[in-house]
Length: 390
Image (cartoon, rainbow, N blue to C red; front, side, top):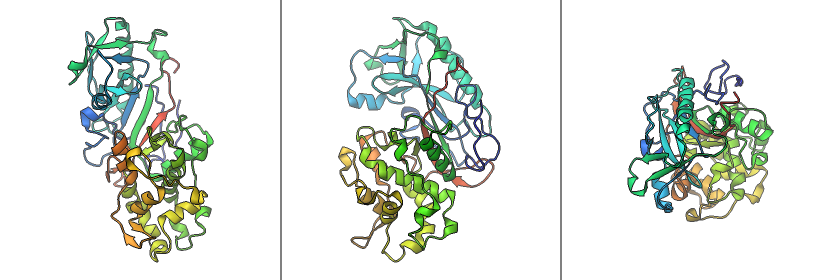
């Protein structure tokens, strides 16, 4: 089963992109490395060549230690290498089994985008390898099934609790996340497909507020006459649709979960890096007189007006939208002061969670076959596919 990605959108190629994530075919783009292996939030990346990073969660398999973990222990164990006892499996190609945290600890296979590159055409084989690993490990199910979690022997022994029914791993869906470099035109398409419920392998069905996602058009910017019409491209609209959706949905977010759960696409390259490269030059004339701010633009095109979120406290996980946008622009219209540009959503996420949003800073990677740099995004909650059904 293949999904056709329209025109340039994904990765700058017009060819049909497979993207069936059932372990018979994967996607083609960038790293999703676990914290213990490669640093928090995919921080270790080599060069600008695009890679394919994948996270495959098997949440129905529960891993239990000798006692309930503290919150600090849970945070530290995320991403640690997990090794089954009495089962070695076949050699791993560019992937590792790690510990993930949710309501419990569970195994997650991480495909390393530093090694697994676009154009290598290895991802399908890696997917089959991962499925076979779980499929062959499953017969070990029972009271004596255990794993070792590197660096956390003191909290073990770690018991593996397999789902009782069914034992056929082909009937269990993997939770899928893909991290890759994508042009902003692709982000516009993914957001549009999420909102309209159009089938797209990178459009999450788990986006909590998909109907509130803002898909902007050229007409939305008519009030801003100094923005040139030919500058309002799909790239421009992709960035503003993402940014506006974050701002509009801010008031509906759960501080414990963060904005990631509201939007199916999470920027790994921070908002400031994207803004300065793709957007700021196009807004120069409109913002130069100091009478219009980035906040004014978002307020107008969103249709939300003064209802944009106002709560402000980094420690509790909420952030005033106007402050976020002022620091993104680097200017406070009310005080007429220049600000140091920074992504406060990224800083908030570092304060409250694992530091995922914008965690790569200004890092971008190229579109395959070109020297064009594009931002890195994570598509989370991709539609589940079941190997047995496929």
